[in-house]
Image (cartoon, rainbow, N blue to C red; front, side, top):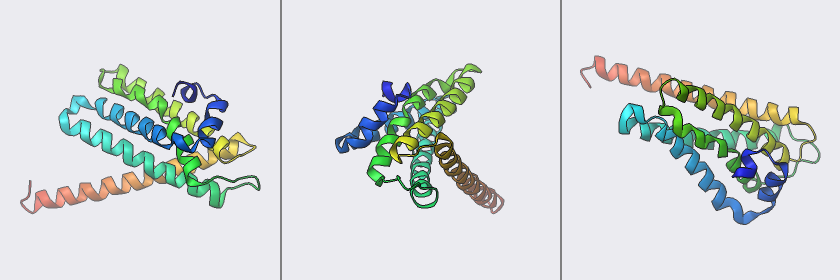
Length: 175
């Protein structure tokens, strides 16, 4: 996790090649999601659960979209990565997300969360570049950015639909 957070290319290469690191990568993702939940403790138990679930689901969607875009639409001739290699490297790229546990701190927590998100984006770019054997960091950034944008659209759309559903239930006499 430390090597991944330090953006060490060698760490991402090791993780990509080590099929036994899949469980460790999922552990990193779960720790990062739990940290996101802890960062929402100011909203009570419900905030912790929603924060954790949203972080985990968001990571899964972003990881899948990044793999799909990177291997099917923006691949290079040298691109040769299976979903396991991609998920391992991207899993370790979630390492900086552990900082999100400090999101509950008034004012400073928001700054820490923003730093963690940008740091995770940079780590994701390094992970994608290594996993997909890209020659260009720009291509890796584009793949990550497209995946992130589609992920945000999905979450905003779902939020809007759920918001409408909640509003409709309230108007119909629900709680």
